[in-house]
Image (cartoon, rainbow, N blue to C red; front, side, top):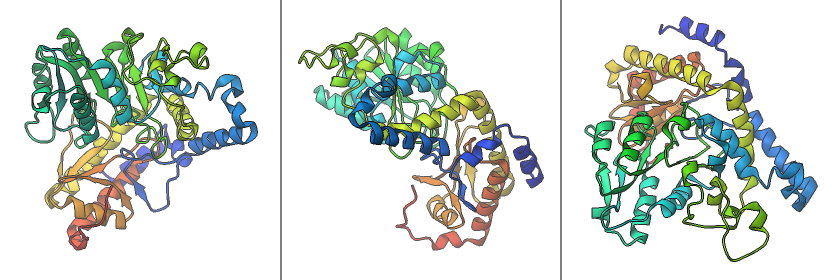
Length: 421
């Protein structure tokens, strides 16, 4: 179960093995950083070139070409992404970035009263989410020490879901949480937490950045109020590709906090009235003119997800991370490494947090040996065996290289100012 022969056998019978050839996998490079930036694919290149050619051939007529596909690109791509989270197509649009989308959603949903004014967050979330929350609190004239409620971690790695639920007191207006923790890959129970929030009258939003494309979601079941995600990690949309935004249909018609002309109902957009007339679905949250070239690669990438299926991708991802954990336990624990991710499938996302006191220097040494991980302060090497383009033999070789680096001790020579993303 942890031999090279096993790895080769698993690669041979992998139903997704043909997808690897579609990605820009470099020879003698083991790319384990797809949870930070996914690799480029042939399909992504083709869809980008298609948009470039359409612009070249049509000029401004691109807005109306192909039945208005590119004018409607935010909802065209939104419909594809909606299938990854089992939401209704009209609830999802492609727009902005995670941070700008959070500003939009918080400006829409946060209306503090004297008795219900706190925003609930956790201390392990990605900093930009917290910056957005603090910004809206400041804009609303709230005192941060009183209005920002932070759920603490007992160990600095994981969150206790009951702690989250218990923190939803009557004074909490909004909860914003990560669906998958970016360091440890812990998956939170979205169904249970969302149900608890709604029972307590709390608006709840989720950041899917480290989950979408790696784990399936069922928003028709959990029905959170809103969600955001980036598309350049597991979704392989390209550096800085346009993000995703979800708003549950029960909030359609709500006054949007930060209005823009692409949020107008299409029938009224070119009337050029100074009176905003919002679309009747998630399109109302759109703002300025969308960047087609930042969206185009995502089209090709999403088509691969819809072809392969999230269930098959998740199945392979779990097999890969199980294999990785097994190899770590056999080869690396005695060398000062530990696994900082949950072992249970339902609690684990698409990457493994490999911990070591010298993780930063080891990360640098790994890159010099052809392994691309990333480092997260203070002691985490994140390894993401992405199902589309990482195989079982790749995982085996990666652990071999780490073992060699640790045993030889050359990582101690790494310069402290070298950058590891």
